Image (cartoon, rainbow, N blue to C red; front, side, top):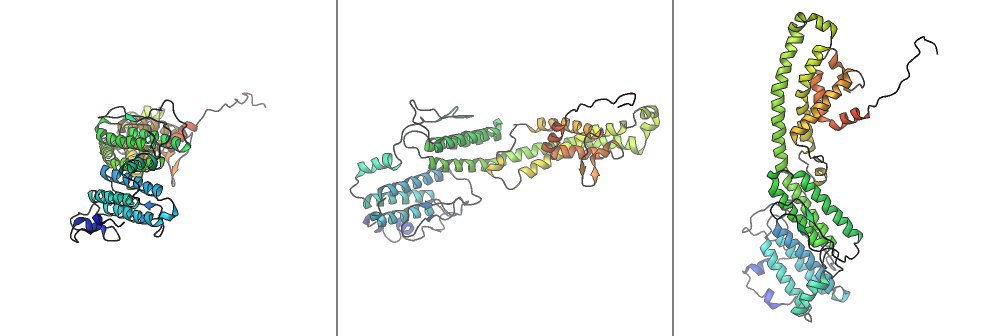
Length: 430
């Protein structure tokens, strides 16, 4: 690394200031504190490094396209160093080049005072150092290594991927090359994961008002396919890294969708509370406090004594349903948002009004089964079946439980099956 053109600058020059310190981290006040995406980079060995580690910060801020591009270039250059200086007799050259690459990562990506442009400058200087350490490689051979041997010319399996639309993409196409080379298990796994992420994008950002988020996520997925699968210089590991960054982008875009859904569920719960909650209170007063109905229609109540409880249930169950749905939504997409949790979010693609109506009808069926005693369900010491006898206010609890624990109620309803029972002999024999 004895290139005089790199180290002979004046002490006050920007280049000499950022390449001289051993840490590679420049606090300079000119760079403002930025959201942290990566923690401090490190080498796998101080004496004989063969790899660089650039850990994502937890939680990570969104990685910009410029940062992602620099990260991929750093990892490509890492491979260049390993290819050119693989032999142990080039240990010292390899170490010097990795130290330069470490400075590049810390300056351009890590901490809160990173500067991508300065990182790019340092990356260019590191490339110059590599060339100077291997003087037999002229510019022509350097290009050959970078474009061929470094990333490796491999059998072509896929042609260039494309989106179905540049402005409003809703799918990605990764065409097989003809004739195609055999796919490795790693390529098949990456291809499967790319299409799984594609479906996640379509589920989460299906609405047209999320068009911009959907386009950004598909752009990241397109880059993943190009880097990890397509052409003759693909790299599955780098594709996996880019796919992880795309998943982070999806997770970072999700709060906008969450906030919109929150507003919708709150609106539904408020309207149902005013309509059905208020109506239920009036009916409860007339039926169970003032007894106006029982005095006026005594014969009807004698024939159907459970009619008041049924009427209350009809209006108070839809009062409890949206409250349960809202609380379940808040618990499911709370503060700890991860990509894996997003995979289970709205897999059926139900809109909030449709989901509310589905749960409403299910709650009526659930209440019917409780009313006839087909099942007995309790919350603590309270039996929900009592809504039909002396506790009509439990109708609200039935609606709430159905909205809050819909899969549980669904299992109860679907597992009930009719059973055949032979009638006993009428003469009492047998």
